[in-house]
Length: 502
Image (cartoon, rainbow, N blue to C red; front, top):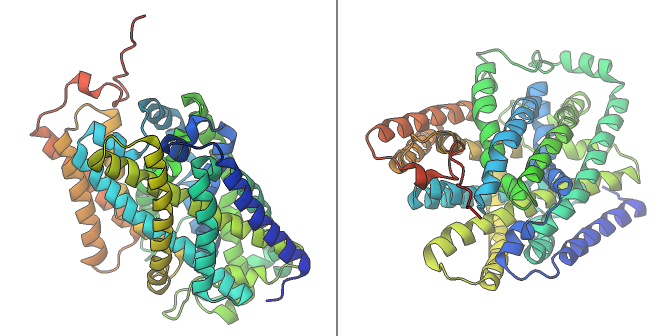
């Protein structure tokens, strides 16, 4: 694809500017506390923008365009049901509480509430998940650059990894949050431009509906909920698996998400960042899914049916971007780059934080100094980016879309995570061994449903693993000894820390 000089100039300036800005923001950093939590000095409005683009990035731009093409408006539920309401619940109940607990990571909280076995298990699970997620994001980048610019997939992945490593390793969470603020603005502009220009090309919303409705297999493409017997997104699975499990677990317990709120100046700012995030997120459900419907109307003959065995993900968004005129193309490519970098920096910074805090410092070297933790964190950023780049080749071959891959990875452990957080934060009933039993039972059920049965929607896998985990926590807790109230203070919502008398 031919890029005009204006487009190339914009993209190059954006890349160099973001990298330089991120490294500049990392000046004066001396400890792991600075690297991982930004010294707890981050303003709520910047954290809110970072929350948005940590959730919505390259994988969503590419993946939701693909799945909007394949399934239609049902995909908007990942924001309508799985985001806005869970974010508000997290804002007013869970985030201020976790902020007051003074933890770096979600596994650290689970270790305090249950035991170190639970902490270690979740730290390892999250680290493996984040490698897979980095692979998903690299696939988004590589596919886009390969289609638009003719770059080799491996070269695209390598260049992206090097660029993100520069400012994430040196700038830490502070650099991540402030570069994400810029990325959020560019991402919104780019998504709006794709929708507006794409709809103009189709002939407007009514013309879009007529063209899509005339195609075979699209009778549910303009419905938010599909029938209960739908093979991919039946409405009970959307309600239970997404609304009750994946959405809440993601916004309450996803380390890459909540780490931003841990870096705010106060619990009220942690709450405010989540509320503003929910407000901004109301823009995105249709901005990211409608391009898939536009692609179906315009490129069905070229791309083919989305439910065929020959389907190859990552094709819809590049075809739409080719419609853009010079100048606007550079802005949209900048938006896509913003999505890539904001996703990568968020997950790789969080993965390094987990390994340093929950594995190295907790089990290997409890007396590690701040500078030691900072340099180890930087080395882990490079390591995780390298592993994610290698994983991208597996993800590319195995999954129909990058969004499907990401949600499938989440479904293995989000059910147990949510069960342990709810039991742990809201009750004194759960014991340390009940927590471990809930974790193991939930992950076991999720693995069996994925690999030991016929194809089952990841939404149902998330739901039944949650049910199994709840059962495991409840049954084992009935027969094992609970911690006393003093041990649980500051870990259960109803048992706040005692105030010291002056």
